[in-house]
Length: 402
Length: 221
Ligand SMILES: Nc1ncnc2c1ncn2[C@@H]1O[C@H](COP(=O)(O)OP(=O)(O)OP(=O)(O)O)[C@@H](O)[C@H]1O
Ligand SMILES: [Mg+2]
Image (tube, rainbow over the protein chains, first blue to last red):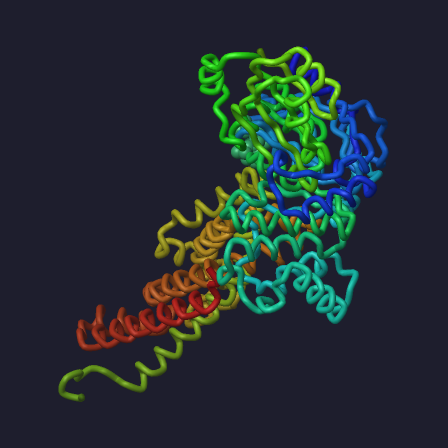
């Protein structure tokens, strides 16, 4: 078994509850954002009141939410001209109820294959897939049809019926299900369109809508039968950045308000960072890394993950290494997460140890709802060892790079 | 008028036109009734489609190809016994319809198959993901989405049928083609030939315009 794959299989079980979901942690952070100050060094926040927060990387916390999607050694090969082409190597995947789970990977990595196994648009070549208590691989034709009504799906190219109005597109899953009468369907459609902000467009045809509006129709349609799971296959890849942001915000809102489990595929780390709780990184049919988004994003292990993060952060690690070669002193990377992002740590360490520091690189942003900062520092003069020890004991993640 | 077209018997032209229209209407109706399901079946059974059935597809495809490769004039003659069996006569409007339908149905079915192929796979996938049965996919997605293409196919088929009706005049099928053959060709009366051809041209023009309008009316892209 290749080492990479083993890694994927091991981390599969290390499920963490979503960051930013813990209400006790959530409230003080809310007040922090209220200040609208983005820079941690100019911000003095009484962090003492906050519970000290540790964030073990790849935490071993037990699973708190029941799983709504479980893959057990699932694999998939396509047969082309009598030859088997492996699209997905045996993998384990556990997605908790109510979380937003991201799958990122390059083109051809097997993301769509993985996603389509969930509602059996693609049949697994082996393994067991349990979704919402149902063994998907064992369903008969009728069972599969009623199962699929409990799982919504949206697509990169929206896949709306051009011949039907917006309202009729949204009504379609309800008509197919045949459980509601016409007036109940009308009511449900009106409510869904209101939810996605398209009440005024009900009588239009898809060709008359913008991309963002089309995807909102797609979302309303996917939610028509009130599924508890929403599968998104590159739902924002055909949209401009601003529209992407609004569609992601809508997905996040639906996730919160409807307790909807969202599985989304993307090739943009930024999409993962904005809405996902956990992420799996795929490369050539293998899940090479998975975990809480903050862990994976801030401390990427696998080369594919690193490239995605670098792409998102627009950092060129090689160029940086060359640049830093000319910088004197020790080089550290500090990662602040949650409340510690805004703690005035650097100033106090510099005062106490007499060490000077210069900032070589840095970023401060949010992962989903929680703030983070990552700084690369050069330390010179004073007691650098004491300074490093002081950072090591503080509520930050320390990486000594040189 | 009388000087320009000395041989033209206008009431007979009128009757022949009505015959042509009823042959066209009757044969088009049966062609669509038979060809649409056949086209849908061809599409569903074809490789990598919903009901992939290689043997069925191969057989249907072969039958369709054989019928399409027989020249219509030959088909007309070959069909005579069958026509007599179905309608009791091989002459007139009733006698013309069965060969017309048999000649046009395979052609129309292929056009329907092509129109269905044009439906975005993603749409079929989306409706599958909603839990639709194959029947629901056909009636709620494939046919509505392919409607403009199917209307265009009906238009092309109708126009093909117009020329087929003229040909059926050869074996006494009645209508404008019959007139053209009997007077224009056998008695060498070019004025009758001219009038019948002009009327057929008008018919083709009207059909194409109406078809184009319908296609446009139902296109939402
Ligand atoms: N229907 C199919 N038949 C044969 N091979 C397929 C089929 N679908 C996908 N594959 C192959 O399986 C592999 C994974 O494909 P998949 O579509 O899952 O990738 P992806 O990660 O979704 O890529 P993208 O970002 O381009 O959508 C690819 O090598 C692809 O060529
Ligand atoms: Mg894909």
